[in-house]
Image 1 (cartoon, rainbow over the protein chains, first blue to last red):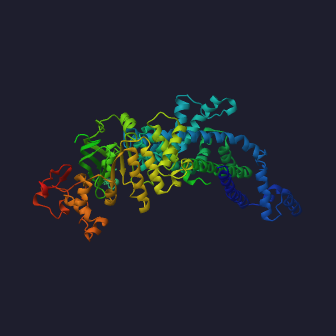
Image 2: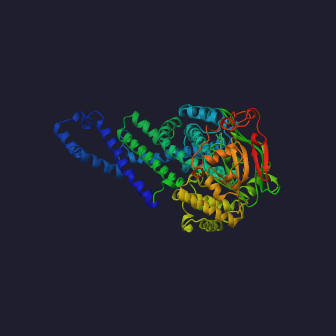
Image 3: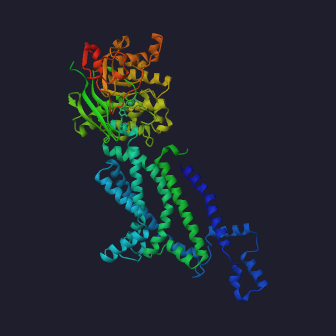
Length: 314
Length: 323
Ligand SMILES: Nc1ncnc2c1ncn2[C@@H]1O[C@H](COP(=O)(O)OP(=O)(O)OP(=O)(O)O)[C@@H](O)[C@H]1O
Ligand SMILES: [Mg+2]
């Protein structure tokens, strides 16, 4: 198993290199000579030459890429053009906020969608099923900014149960932190929850028709075991794949939700940096989110092999 | 004749589909005596599996439902038994079932050992380790080589024949009085088929289990059964001893089955299939359900359903020819 995990991890390297290559080319493709911008009025041919040498811009592109990649891997991500602070410090400060938001949103989606999907599938076309399916249809079609605004108005402004656009980090106490993260996490997780609910329901409906479910019943197992042991584990196999694919949307949604709730995460950093043309930060934002997506899919792969022994490699 | 182990009377199991009501079992009468093997034969779609599943109340609802009838077993009507007793005392304990296709009847995401263990643990208060030990023991008994290792494997590491052995092990774990075997060998190739039948014969002696053996294959009936029941379009049309059946049954459909069976036709010198195909179970023909395909049909066969006639002790036929 360990060897399997290691092998999957190694397989990520080419993809990672691909991402960095795209980012590198993207940054180079931005029109305008950076030397021109830096020197501005002081421009002279000799000075430009000296700067090119200092910044390594006179070297072959491949060497430039390797030097840049080394910087990326060793944490030398340059300084923000706006704040002049090292980019990596800013990212390190904000990453935990986004990670917490993503984990909470995903946890919210999974924790509710599994029982909802099972309840729906156990008695298809019953009242609970119809209710859940209608609500989930609604949930899927509500965009984050709308749902988020709605929740803000109801729970923060009208009822005043929860804080609006403020943030308390984990170090400020778990309870306070969760109070502030609740609305953003629900906003981000709702559409996924609705989607997973429908997915698990359909997957369960497919599974309960299988012969091995009859076998389980014929053995004299309780209906609880038949559904939650024999059917659910099989139904989760296709669901987990989709969960992996949805993580990309989740990262995209985090940008919107962080901006809406003014959370100091990677997403809002990304938006701000793009608006301010702060290229080193944009570059870091793209690489961090792409790598996050990669690692999340890797985690899903591992979960998948635990669920389905048929794809486990020895 | 009241000493039957299992007695099905007037069983009607319907499926409520968009095309209409499928009368999959439409007045089935069957009985199985202690220690005997009853062969249940008939063309595909005549309601054999539905009848067997109805006994253990495994019919999916919706769309299906047992609408009428009784299934008496050891003095109780299984169709009226509370769910808890059905689960604890009957399913997998007094009555077990093995299914048509061994490739799909084991759960792919649990080890075979786990699945066999469950059969023990559902009916006896024993721990995990003990159940696993007994699983190894019974897997060995049904002919799985190196059961200590195989018990930890997932079904995809088993061949079709091994899976059916594992299913048999699971079914016999609690030494049931009755085994419902739904085409236990049909999906397997010929040599494996013979091995599985041999195993079932052997275990039948050892465990003193009665068997309801569902099959298309009259060769299997000749090999295994004490009595035969012939089903057509949701009803039993003939019941008799196995010798009687192979000497020449009474119902034209049973005769047709016998003549269309390659093994028998060789003896008769020609293959003689039944013309036509099984009727639409939503709107079965008026009168006798077999009359559109019957060479001996009389005028009244098209009008009224035939009564059941007793030709001799233990030989019943549902046909106007014998009225
Ligand atoms: N879940 C279901 N929904 C609707 N109709 C069903 C369902 N299960 C069985 N039937 C119908 O019941 C009838 C009898 O089916 P059954 O499976 O008992 O046939 P069988 O005699 O076992 O055939 P085979 O030899 O092919 O296994 C068929 O017409 C079938 O279409
Ligand atoms: Mg069948």
